Length: 199
Ligand code: ADP
Image 1 (cartoon, rainbow, N blue to C red):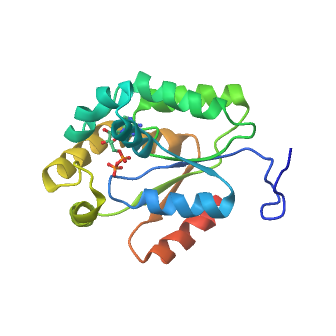
Image 2: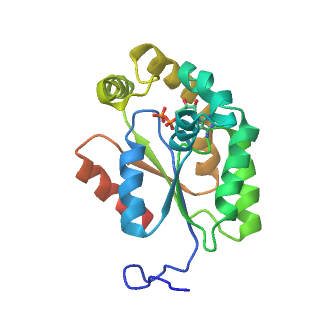
């Protein structure tokens, strides 16, 4: 077995980052870079679900219409998926992008992490004003190939976020994990702010 300790002194240590923020805030791009530079595995539930849709798996066929509508996939499917991902890891070094999205998912994750002995390290919240978000998603839609990246579905996704995911802000603030970050600025500026809270 080989461990890469040269880049990251703490490569054996558990590290759990949960990335919160509305659709279009830029979590995916920033999470990708944080994962690469901190030796973390990025777990993006949106990417995993879209991959199932593209491969036409049973799960993919089940969730395709839900993704297209901008609504949330049922909690039990997501929880099973995350349990599966985490159980494969010897050391839990992850950054979650797009999960949890409901209080039920957050509670299940908490139990799962407790079983694994991997406490949450930080919950950065990427804050971006609503009008900027819709504009970014519509712009992204020109090249993303995602059929939920249009203005109508984007607005619905914001609404779903407000109703079902925003309560997680208080949930993680109450536990002392929440780190609000200004998500307006260049990619590098936002990345530097994130670096400071992730450590
Ligand atoms: P964005 O954050 O840009 O809206 P994502 O790629 O994170 O997009 O998610 C796309 C879609 O995948 C969501 O609108 C939802 O249908 C589904 N999805 C992703 N993660 C979850 C989750 N944790 N719970 C329920 N549904 C999810």
